[in-house]
Image (cartoon, rainbow, N blue to C red; front, side, top):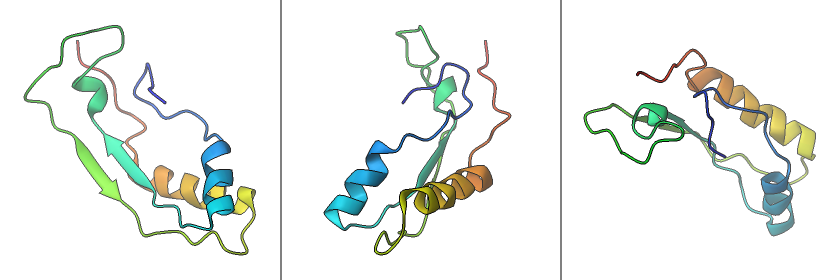
Length: 89
């Protein structure tokens, strides 16, 4: 879901259950910079801002529990999401 600060919130379990039940891999995607394109509580899209996208390798869900999967995706986000990003004014 959308962050009001630009920093990621905690992961939710629903998508992980869906992936396991469907027996499909999880593909983690880290997106940085969108807070500066469409800031919270604004309707105007700012052009000229840089957005970076990092797509991770698929994570097999077979034989894995939800907590293991969440930890692996969280590690990907920790490595690829800019946790210090601040929305420009």
